Image (cartoon, rainbow, N blue to C red; front, top):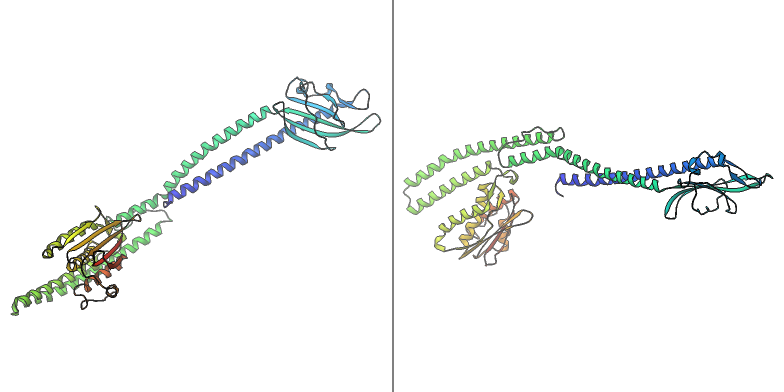
Length: 448
């Protein structure tokens, strides 16, 4: 989950779904509780209406319910779904409503003044049942214990509850999906400035623009403005370096030209003249390279991608011609393309020095291998079958400014330059003993 959009989408989806489910469960429970309370209250009112119709029976020792004083028509309508009974202390039925067509079991003993509401399944049918215990005086003013029990058919209630649940969860799913869509659209719209920044950074890396050009929200605008200031400052510094190096190069060209002219008039031998020309040409090359190095971009994040395979092929072709008399055989195992963010001149300098050493000190064989890793890093391995370097020599050449000209002619300066460049690009450089006997050099780059 490296994408911010994916993380926000997943978290929002989980939070929204959990919230909606908990809301639906809470709402369902609240509605169910309120509906049950309404049923209980309705049955209590029925009990009070029955108590209003209670009177002594003919003997005066017990009580009954007068049908003339019942104002609930459902109690006198057969199988209406609303039923009532009156019991004495011994659970003997003293009275039942005319709506009853089947027998109902007596309720458990109730304490005086106690209400008991529950849901009972009787003959495969659910019923609400409410019982109430009371005392009533007989003809001798002796208080006797009685229990009123009312029943209501609950089939309709559970059917309505089932329809409510289906409707609730259907609307819950529809609402959740709609909210997820809205949240996703809002999230994409909110993250669009970050996507635009990524596009502009890519354009700056590819040198298609020099800074951030779009307008951004207030939260991001300070970042892009400061980055623009940093980029302009870096461009200004590069321009200053370029001017300084141009002045240096211009100042050195005249003395070098004089030295070249003196070589033709000094009466030196041909070999000495050639040596002098080679050294002045070498000085020209050093000045040109240092000028280019000072004005080039050394940050791999804002360098234009270069193809390492193409650079290796170009250098290999040139070195095979230079060292043609040695008959060096090159075994190459490189992918079709390896893109790096590095200045092309620096890449040529590093790979050129290492390949030149491999051709110069290798006896018959040079091997090249390239490896692409899952983390997008790239390995370039160069091996030769020459004498190689000892461990203490390898340790010395990795030190900045160290020279091994006296110990191993021709390798010290070149490898010191390589070490300097790879350090500026944070490239991993490793020397060791090659499998074919000579020096093994491994470079690890970050891919473009």
